[in-house]
Length: 277
Image (cartoon, rainbow, N blue to C red; front, side):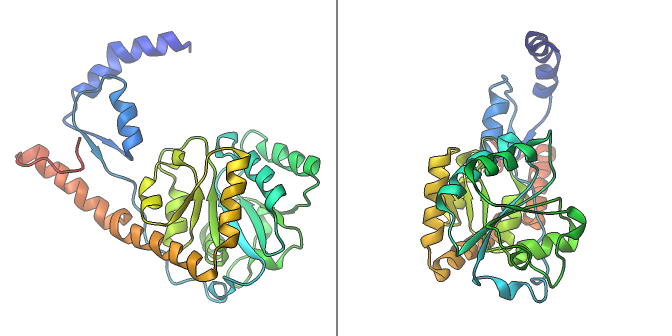
C-alpha cells in the first residue's frame, strides 16, 4: 500500500487506460485539473452531479423560517475534513440568541466525541437528539431544545426534508470536497450557504448565493457575523439566487442534455461542446 507503488501502478497501467478513453467526466473544474495532473491528455467533460427539486416545503415547517431563533444547518458526515471543529470554535465566539446551530449527520471515526469534547472545553452548551427521535413533518428542531447547538443523528426522507425546510441558512466550512450535494440540496431549498472555496462551487459566490470563508475558525466566525447581520430579505434573496442556480445548471434534465451532447459529439463528430476541455 506504499505511495510509490501506487504511483508506479498508476503510470504503468491506469494512466494508459485513461488515455485510451474517448472522453472523461469530471464533476467540477478542480477535479478536471486533478485528472490532468496525472498526465491524462484526452478530452474531459465537466458535468456536475444533478439534483431533483424538492416537493413543496413540508407542511407546517416552511413558515418557521425567519422566526427566532433562526437555524444554521450543517448536514453531512461528521469527519475532520468537514471543518466542524473550526465551526464550533467560530460558533462559540459568535453565538447569538437569535440563532441556533444544528449539526446533523452520521459519526465517522468517533469525530462526534471530539466535537462534543471541544464544546465542553469552550463552555458551549449543547444537546443531542437521537436519530430515531429526530423531528418529522410538523416538528422543527428549534422547538426541541434551549441550547444554541444541537447534535442530531443521520436524517433521511421526510425528516431530512423537514430539517432543510425549517432551516434559515446552511454551512459547510470544509477543507476538501468533490462536489458537495448537501450545498446543492440547500440551494434547492432556498438556503444561503456559508462555505469555502474547497466546495468547488465558485458559481455560487458569483451568483450571490454564498458567503465565502476560509477553513479557519477566524474566517468562519467572520462569515457567521456577516450572515447574522443580514436582513431577512437579503438572506432570502441569497437563497433565491441559489435556487435559480440549481434550476439553471444542476437539474437532472440539464445534466442529461449535457451528457447526450457529449455522446453525440463522440459518435458523430462535429463541434466540441463548450464544457469539454
